[in-house]
Image 1 (cartoon, one colour):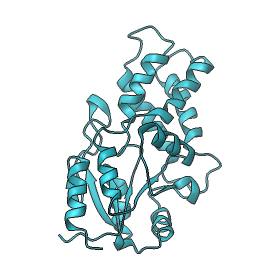
Image 2 (cartoon, helix red, strand yellow; image 1 turned 180 degrees about the horizontal axis):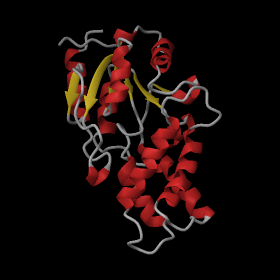
Image 3 (cartoon, one colour; image 1 turned 90 degrees about the vertical axis):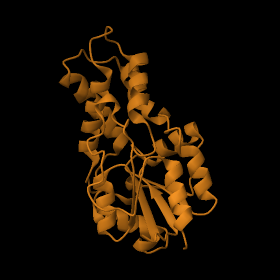
Length: 237
């Protein structure tokens, strides 16, 4: 398939960032409960599920994902029947999202891609969080487009349409990169090009809920180096 694009949008929360590994580490450092009280992998996965459930598909909500991370953390503690976290520990844990690590193969691939094409973070995470986590990981974007700015959250069509319009491009000129089918399917439905990058460790030992593409995408790769090779090797726009 001949892939042509003039800009690349990256889902960020799970595709670029190792939220699971980073939050497991943060929980281990901040947890007030005795060792062995809760499975850290199960805890952070439940927290993530509740956070995604609170933000996906929202339309002009009076809150952002920082707020959802806070409320979902409290609900997760209650879900596991744990004693409430002291406020300093709870604050430190939800703010650990601003210090999560990017996947090791992403930063060099991003730098290489940006030598030829604009690379944009297109995310449900708040703008300030993406700024913090990008600086933490040494990531330089050409732009950050947060659904917080748009007021419409993925997978609503308007979110993708707005991101494309803000780039001054047509949907067929823009490649959406993600490790989640729902994100790529929504982008594809708007006429965008799509690339599935596998992140088998995104949810830790349990594995991701959708590790395999459920549609035909323009590219399907195992790592970001291969992704950039595929883009630059075929890019003619």
